[in-house]
Image (cartoon, rainbow, N blue to C red; front, top):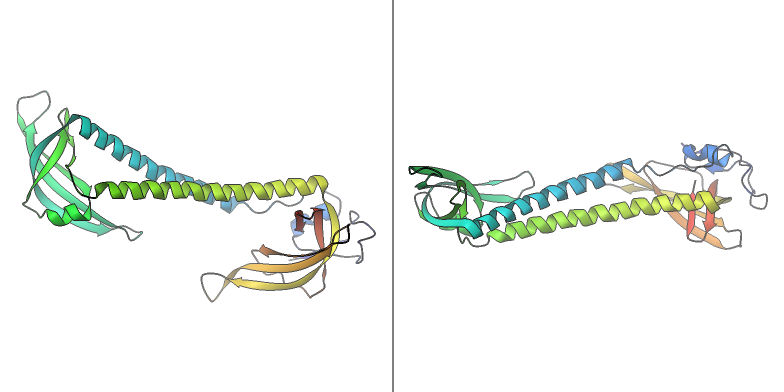
Length: 267
């Protein structure tokens, strides 16, 4: 909850109220002159989200890379042969994306032997390929002669689209992680600037408003509108968002740390 605290840091020209309200209790030590650091925003969840986005994006790009390496090896060293479709199936993953698989068998001479052997493989294919080949149908597959377990459906339509989409999704996750990292660094830069050059000013709480979340029955942010006068006499009105309710009476005095018109924060 917000707490009142007299601040010896506040200049006398601005100290209209003797006990301004500190919105974030973690800043009480700074306001009272007992600490040289203001409270940093709670960035742990953002950092975890950045790590998660980078991890998922890396996995997606890894799978795309592995698929490309496999396709490249088959393209350069592959041998085409006729196979028989033994089964096909489709399913939805937990994200709702549809996947199509074919299972086929083919016969060839096993490496380093003269004996024929039957190989079986299940591979992901495009929807067009899935619809074209029913169980029992003949299909052309490509395999690596040195390792017949490495095979794929040859010349299938639209299979590269999935890899392209997966790569783009991975890059978008990287972009999202970059945006969040930039946001975290900007907040860190603001706090360092305020600690180096900031001075405390008494402002006033204007109003508060709960912001609804995804559910209509609860909110997850609370917006505070406040106002203060700079040492140069300029009136600045702004708003900040918090993760919990911070209801105060209108005109309640609050503490603002101010460095310039672009660098300030409600404490």
